[in-house]
Image (tube, rainbow, N blue to C red; front, side, top):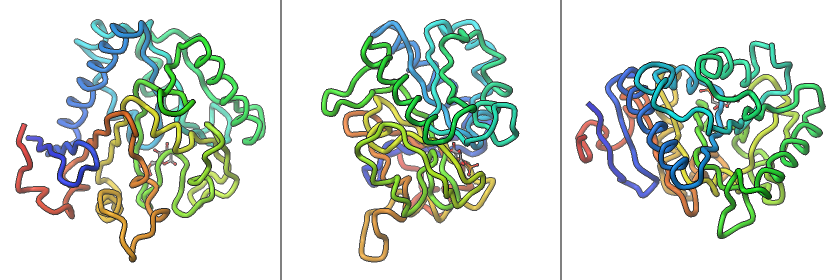
Length: 272
Ligand SMILES: O=C1O[C@H](COP(=O)(O)O)[C@@H](O)[C@H](O)[C@H]1O
């Protein structure tokens, strides 16, 4: 059973009994957005993350989606990457390639991985340049309220410290309003060097899905992410709370374990 609702206007909350139910709904959600975007614009632009996301997308590789999704219209990006080689165990590209992209017929020329042969700074600059070219020709849509790219879907996970993509609590990258893609060299979670979308890009997407499951202790960070700011909780303490698409839709895919500390999480806010 899943419950969904909008208790604090922080997007739609979907809470599932287990990760299998979550994965089933997530696959259907992505497939529907893909169908809608392909109908509307002829393409589907999707940005992936690391963490448990890729294994939770696994049902897309199976029937019916393996046949019904128009994979040739997909353009795949990364919301963040670690500055390691593509064959390294920490590579978000490797995670996605091994667990998802090698199992579906997305065109290789539509897979926009981040350069692993450059410094983090150069790779970030190069990735932003690539995205700018794709915005120019409108493969990636553009936001009507900023000049930012408007991805059809950005998929994010949340770390136990509330980080999303490679935007960490209190890190100056959280306040970057100039760049679309930036780099950090001091990640509190290894590896230290990373490339990441900035918040203006994340918050310009048509759809953002936050996929958070409780295999690590993320319940407290989730409460903070869904809470209002007050004197005890300064804005930069929870990057996940700063995810708020200005003109798009935010959906939280949660399991019961991670939602266990939310008010009313088991009182059923609008049962599905
Ligand atoms: O380091 C990263 O962490 C986040 C969250 O992942 P988790 O393993 O702590 O759940 C992930 O979304 C991001 O892409 C990744 O680079």
